Amino acid sequence: MKLRLEHCKNVDLMYGQGNGSGYWSDPVDKRLIMLEVASIAEASKAIEAWRDRNGLGGGNMAKRCGEITIGDRVVAEASYNGRVWTPYDHSSMEEWREKSELVVTK
Image (cartoon, rainbow, N blue to C red; front, side, top):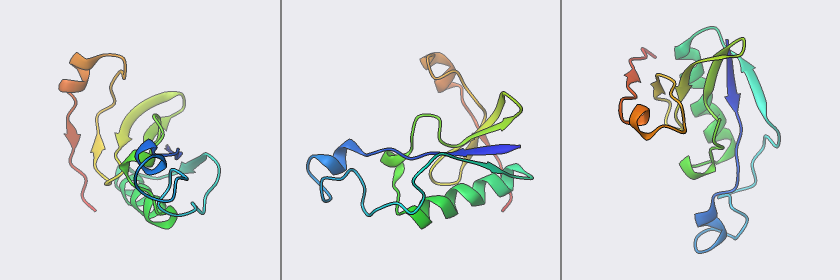
């Protein structure tokens, strides 16, 4: 199982808050990371640790950041806050409304 960790500039930090870079501070990890995880609970802890290590907020999460995959199949998605959700089709608002949180014991 793999967890996708990828950040991007936050537009709010480019025009108004922050130093104009799109980040609160310079991220440690500069590239996409596909992290091997043994469980959903491990993925939840890993995204929080990655977020904190890089000084990121929710607006810095790239579109596919947090995807948890087995092979080519997305089996769950982790939010910036460590919550893990059932996967959904990002192009469908109806499916987004029905998205539900998976209970993770940390």
